[in-house]
Image (cartoon, rainbow, N blue to C red; front, side, top):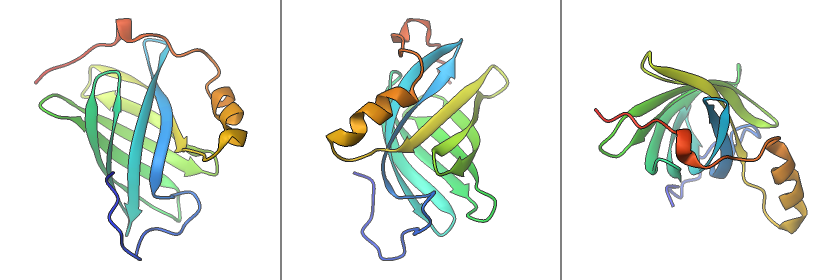
Length: 139
């Protein structure tokens, strides 16, 4: 979807380019998101979708410290700033929309095959609620 074929893709196990999935928390409710991320030369780019709509990612990562900073931008709408840390379980951290809203997030590489489907479901401890409480900010 967003990946370029290039032999200089990141080879670090905590930063695999490809399909990712996970959630963010807003008002104590988990919202699912799916995305495709490319990690290359300390830079992140990609795109995806969630209950708000389609978005693009841009950001940076550091293999030595595991730190990640990303901006999720919805087309024609607002941006969300993500700051986190990568490990063998994915990327964890917090997000914020200017000074209005903040919450947590966790994304991880999407696993292939049915044997991993049960693992992925267990990773989200609570059911994901409908987007009824989601706040959309237009600029």
